[in-house]
Amino acid sequence: MNTDEQHTRSMERDRSPSPVRGGGRRSRFVRPGAAVAAVAVLLLLVHTFAAEPFRIPSGSMGNTLKAGDRVLVNKLAYRFGNLPARGDVVVFDGTGSFDREPSRGTDYVKRVVGVGGDRVRCCDERGRIEVNGEPVDEAYLYPGDRPSAVPFDIAVPEGRLWVMGDHRSRSSDSRDHLGAPGGGTVPVERVIGRADWIVWPADRWTSLRGRDG
Image 1 (cartoon, rainbow, N blue to C red):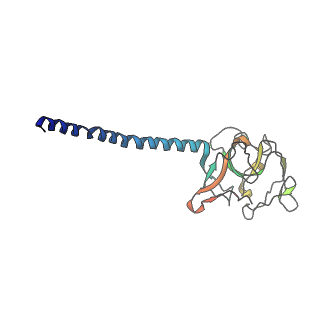
Image 2: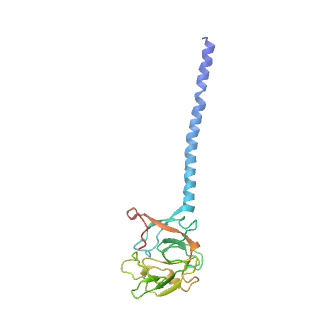
Image 3: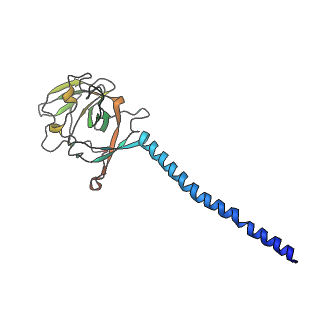
């Protein structure tokens, strides 16, 4: 092999690694950026359509929920034809029912006691709330609380909910809005979702499903 041939082959060998190294460097910078963007989009979609954390602002749902608890709200629970059921703990926008005018901080968390078509009254001779003439065993009530100190008898309109806090003596709920439009009931379309999990603090991590008494 003459000197010219050796020089030519040496140049060919020297050129070949350069594009490979350049492509590797570009991929290392591009791929992490794409992954971060994909995660951000996924989190946005989950927050918007699937689940959202909610901070409990007061003790009106004690002892089930305590002030400062964070719950995970299932925003898909009432999609696809599903409706809130008695015993569900729901987060809803109180505009037009609990709040006459739109304002900041109109989201509430309460328990569904009556749904559309139900007759809810308080109380029977043993002090229990009745739904459609049947007493409700409310094992979730705050210890020492009566089901209600306020008597009421309401026929829940279709498409609306009668909601109450578990800490009845500390809860401002449907009973406090009997004279408002809807008689204290909340439109189903104002429900943001169902509170399914306590996720914070860590020592209170638990499911809320199946705890309806």
